[in-house]
Each structure stands twice: as C-alpha cells, then as structure tokens.
Length: 122
Image (cartoon, rainbow, N blue to C red; front, side):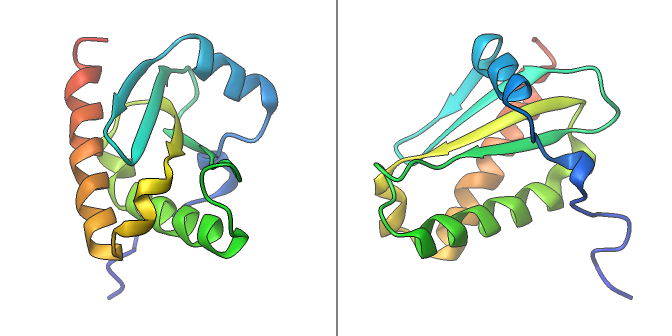
C-alpha cells in the first residue's frame, strides 16, 4: 500500500489569496535559521495551509525556486496531519542552495517540530 494514503496536498492546503498571506505576515510567530523563515499564524479553517514566498532576489534561477517549493511541499505533506490548524508562509534564503535534499528535509523536520511545540503556547 502507498505510504501516502490519507495524506494529500490539495488546493485547500494552500494559501492562495493575497489577504491570506497578509494575515499571516501581520499576525504570526517565527521559526527561523540561516536558510528558512517560517511565519506561522492561527486560522479558522479545517486544515493547516502553506504558502511560499521564495524571492528571485534570494534564489535567482526559477528551476531552483521550483525545486525548493516541491521539497518543502513534500515535507509539509508528511507532517500536515500532526499540526494544528495553522497558516504557514515559508521563506528561504540563498544559503539553502548549499544544502542537498536530505539536509533540507532534516532542517524542515526540525522546523515542523518547533512549530508544533510553539503552537501549544500560541
């Protein structure tokens, strides 16, 4: 059986509107390191949602930006069921290009755990 059963990344799992991003940017807590900044805000919908703010200024090539978004999306999909109802905006810095895929997943796993722990106090 597929290990992805029951876990998906549907449109309802995404931040799509400018107002949704604005809400997270205004009312949030941060989890960050030298490669990632996660802005986390409470929300009222039924699922945890994620959005990306991957700037051309930080990651020049579109192929790199898209690759990073796929990796982040996959990591999020794996941890989505553990998280409370949140809106999360993920931003990256150019240092991330020095990491390989497994290092990126390891850092993201650490960040998801921090988000879950911080939500108990938010």
